[in-house]
Amino acid sequence: MRIARRATVIAIAAAIAMTAFAPPVAASQDEPDALSHPAVRVEPASADDAARAAEAAVAAMSTRQRAAAVVMGHIPTTDPAALQAYMQSSGIGGFILMGANIPADESALRTLTAALTVDPAFPPVIAIDQEGGDVSRLPWDDFPAARTLKDAPPAAAEDAFAARGALVRRAGIGVNFGIVADETGDSSSFIYRRALGTTPESAAERVTAAVQGESPSALSTLKHFPGHGAAPGDSHSTIPSTAMPREEWQASDGVPFVAGVDAGAPLLMFGHLVYSSVDTAPASLSPEWHRIARDDLGFDGVIVTDDLGMLQASGLPQYADPVANVVTALTAGNDLVLNVVFSTPDTAGRTVDGIVAAVESGALPAERLQQAAERVTALRLTLAAEGSGLTPCTECAPAD
Image (cartoon, rainbow, N blue to C red; front, side, top):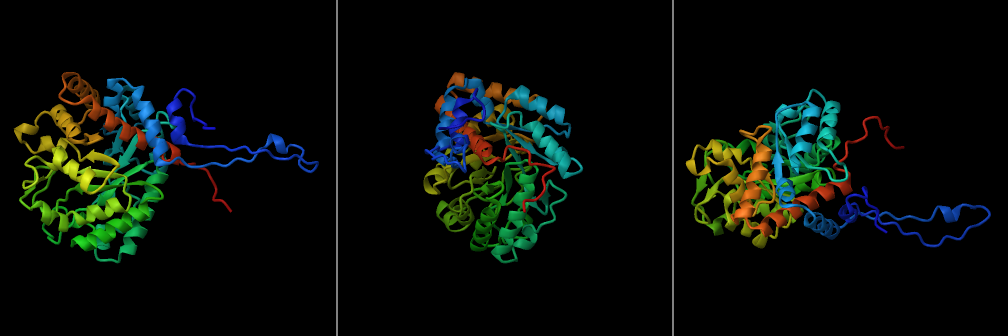
């Protein structure tokens, strides 16, 4: 029989997936209560279990609830009460921790992530950019990062990300936006110090190792698809562009992403960069790049945008409307839309309103929103089933 963590959320039962089998047990004089303590076998949920539970849960959602489910928000505070109020009032599906959310120590961070998790049986997607090195939100992460890992054997990347993933998980964070699959040998590139390799092959080996190391603890994310290495410029303030043909990309910048997908990374972050021979739109807003990821690379996990505020920060008039950017991103194929730059406590609500209006007007197909909500919901149920939505025990002693 399936045992749900909360009777009020029947669809979650399949994702929690604790299946108990109680075969007959013969009582004896030595074991007088054997029948009252039947044998129990606990089995983890499969991906199909989570997908079916997500379909059932999303089917019961209103359009507004589905819209909220695909939004990852942010407010810059370390006040647990403010964060809990933000998540309760917005109903959004995720939260990204930035530097302004990190308190003085790990214990305080666990209190904060517990506040974000309004319902442990259906936790939000709590994420962090914990690459180590130049992009490190956790000051207590002293493990090697890309600057040294790119010159070390792949096993060093596996060890570093195993440790990094454990730190993330220990803080009550389920998802790490931490594996940079961009590759470049150009030391003047803004992504060079963060890339795990200077050639497609060396980056692919270390990306694979990083996913393998991190996967027992935190859910890995590959970024920034389809790759910054070939496109000069920093996407935090401009839209980098390259004329590299698709075939050349496949043999170069695409190699580390293929390796990471094959290694089982469950999330893929799309960057705000243009490969003009494929699409004149940034990859994050490109239906064709999403088709390539799904059909050609075989990626079946959650696709998340890089911070959509970066599009606004480019100053280009076509990206001045943040709600329009969200709708375009979802229509293109993203499942989770991320807002950090320019985000305020009101941004999440306005974003949800905009998504609902787009569905009602037909600008965003209802089926596309449903698909995105199902993928994000399945991820949340997976986090619940694996315990990644729960704050770790702070007073536990090691097992003997």
